[in-house]
Image (cartoon, rainbow, N blue to C red; front, top):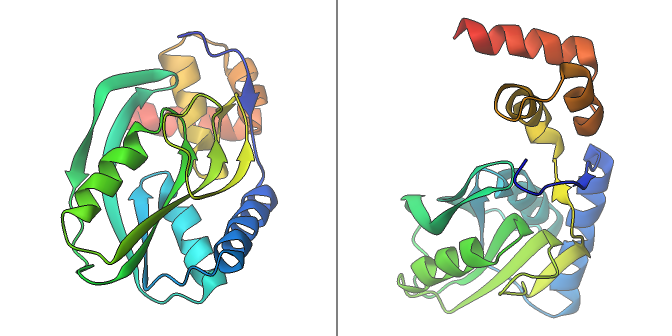
Length: 191
């Protein structure tokens, strides 16, 4: 399984608490973003929560693909959905769920910087100790593979279908009821 042996499965409450901690760090630093930009897909929920906690109404998204699956990375991240919000002259807070290698944040920051913002700062819920880029703000450091609440069923499907794990083991790791996981697999196979 591409050397992934340790998993972290935060609850929705954990995610909300980390987003609150990140928002408190941002405010404590005196940074007042004009717009929050989330990195799709994983950073969408984190960005919405952080923007809400900061009282920032302008929320935009950019999609940067780096992972091809659990523990499987592409060589370099690729911007697959450009930023549509104008950020010229604005203070931007770029939010993602995790800084693993740091390459996704670096690529997104570079892309956004080409559009003339006043400043770009970065924030993540989690930071991996080996990340080449440390976000300006982050919630917690971990060396585990994180299975977020919004990707649990996706993780179960991949663990079963692509990694050959039993349904029961995959459901246990992802914190999913095995009956729900079985229903998901049936739905996925029907498409």
